[in-house]
Length: 171
Image (cartoon, rainbow, N blue to C red; front, side, top):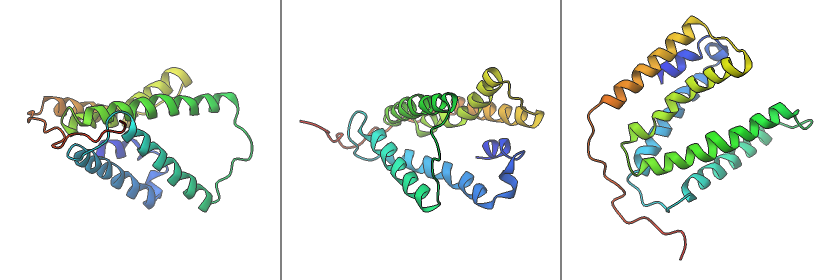
């Protein structure tokens, strides 16, 4: 969590205690869910990531309504295209790949994509939108990459796949 939080120190993160709490609790919850998912009986296929995304979407819809979020007008084509990209690539493909990996590799390896996402996002922003990042941000990315190297080189323990047979989602 620390390298990811380091990337946010230059923005409004330092002035928002709720943001700090979310930055700490989010990865802890994700990691806990990954460890538990590797030990639970779960349906096969895409049912798990579909349930995660539907539940998350409904929660965000309710929270948005409670906090007064409204769409005043349909966004321009670039923001709409960005939203479609985020729906299909990181969400559908990412959650599906993660659900597959959780049952086949160590949780630390299955979760390593979460550390790579900020680096990909910053790099794409620099390449496609001309965004810049500071020496501080570059240092944080080096720490993140170093962490990934250490994780990849750590000792592997045997994976205990779902102890019980997976629940079938169909006949």
